[in-house]
Structure formats: C-alpha cells, structure tokens
Length: 179
Image (cartoon, rainbow, N blue to C red; front, side, top):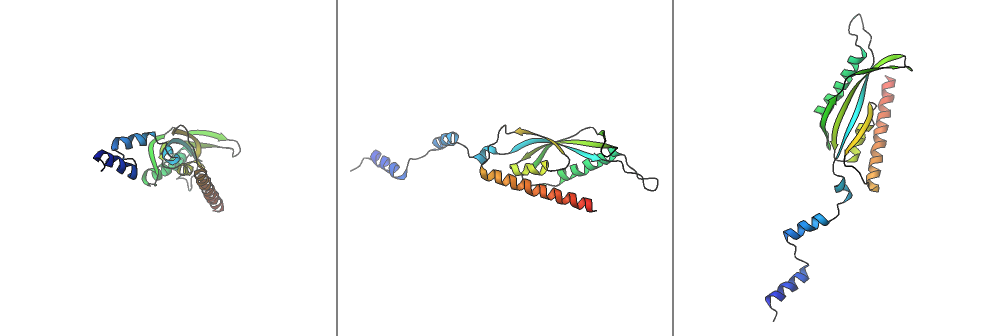
C-alpha cells in the first residue's frame, strides 16, 4: 500500500507539476514578452504647420490676412481632434505656437503658418500613419518606447496603412484641384 506522501507525489507527476500563486508570478516575470505585448502603446509628439494665405475682400469687406486664415485652419483641425474620438488614439497634450510668416518665392507672396504640436498616444503603429500623411505634417518625435521590433505581419499592416492613407490624400488633393 502507498503512503499518503507517495500518493501525492504520484498524483503531481500524473497531473503535471502543481503550480501555486507564487510560482505562477515567478514564471510570468521570467517569460519573454511577445512582440505585440512589448510594443504596447506608442507615445509621440507631432508638429503641424497650418498654412494661411491672404483672402482678398469681397465688396469692400470680409477680407482676412494670412495669419487669421492660418489660425482659423488650425482651430478647425484642433476642434476635430478634441471632439471626435478615434479608437486607439488619445491626445495627451496640445501646444499652440505663435503664428509666423514666410515669403514663398515660387508663389511670390507671403504665407502665414500656424504651428501646432500634439502629444499623442496610440495603441498600434498603424494609427501613427494618420498623422504623418497629412499635408501639414512637419516633424515627429517618438517618446515611448525607445525601440520597436516589428514582425513581418506588423510591417505588412503598416505598409498597407501607409498605402491606403497616401492614396486617400492623393484623391483628396485631386478632388480639391478639380473644384
């Protein structure tokens, strides 16, 4: 006849090693993270410069200078980002900078720009593309994580999203030129 201790040892062998809560905690700490879990959320700063050209007055009133047009364009886009929620994207900080003007030689006129810096947190790398393909995009700085490792599937999704966004931007630009 088996002793109770031997019975427990045999049961553990048959059922596999019994895992207690402390053992599970140690195993989770020592397990390497999957690529997707390691990536987590991505925090970045992105800068846009919204363009504004002088609008001449119609019938002696209603004209706007380039700085006002640039501010108005920036406020319109800012209102969309603040009020329209997008799954996987959250705006952390918004910083509006001073409007500046530049003389553009090819157009032979002064153009005003209204800079806007956003600190954004996204769940996936594909969500970042939405910000980068905009015409107003000027600069991006990745804050977290310090490095990213992409699987081939993640890279494929990213490139597909870039393709879609670029195609949409070209379509909108052509549509705007036709009007």
